[in-house]
Length: 436
Image (cartoon, rainbow, N blue to C red; front, side, top):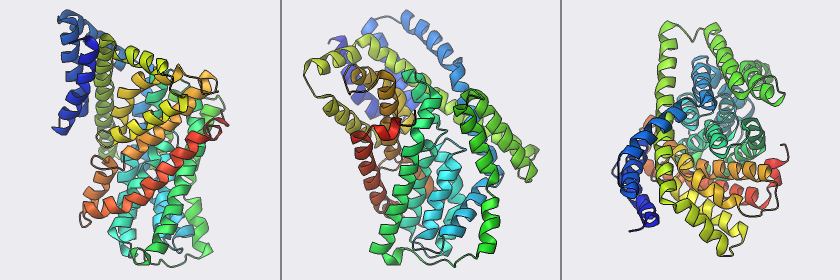
């Protein structure tokens, strides 16, 4: 068996391990180690490789931005910012048809602007919005689906942990990727609002009616979200204006969110330690995934599968857009069996060299940014598609009276909107790059 064939066989082995409920990071690490041994026939290079990759992964300064953004999200949740965002959105939208669900999506968008994690956004906003959705007579399918879809805005609207990982893998500017993701992220939020508006008109029984909030209460509710706006403009605006590097901005944002949480009484010694613990656990999981993917991708490099695949694609005469569409479809399929972060760290080193060798009529930088936004969007779809759909399981676990089948049915219109948005962003790259 040739080394290329060994590389090809590694993918069904990896998928089998995932279906056997082996943690994805461990599955990639184990497959990479064993595959490298089979290709090279000895353990010495593997041990040397593990030492080098472990150091390179954990000593990467750019990765320090991840725990800081995660910590910022922890402090924001403790500071009551999620509740303030939902109250403000509900004050302006709650009385409309499907308005409380729309408010939940809007609050997810706001919280995503200071969090950067899809799972954290979904879990945090579910705690706030689920009781209100149930109290106002929303069906379990619509309520859970709207929160699961809204949670994906945590990685679509900058700052985004997934975009940071992509920037490192593709060697691109993090600030420019954040800027490019802004309009597509707002487009995603708007499309979810449209889906809810259509959903409640097709199925009127799925949504109740909330009372109209008087203007005397709307203004204070809007004013209460000033910490979120201040942190967002300080972090993202500071990066764009050149005041801070992305890592410095993340540190300032985490510090600012911590001060707000402390001032509001949501942060004491015990909760502070809990924030650090949760951040450390999430960071360790992410770094383990990055390490596992690095070892697996190193094995693929030894097998020469990516090089041979790139050469084969370029010699077949496929149109560049055809190759891109096939890759995006593969991402959607992969998203059904693995989480977005694992999918990106595993596939970007394979797919990126293939597409960059083709002519899409864009400069190399603009193409890398456009491709990154497309990858981010299809990765987001994987968060709400069965059978993995991590956001679906997060919301389902927090809404135990709603059967997972109801959530699956409710999420279909949102996934349809996501697919339509992918088509638009693929057909019109300018949407992603005109701000860069």
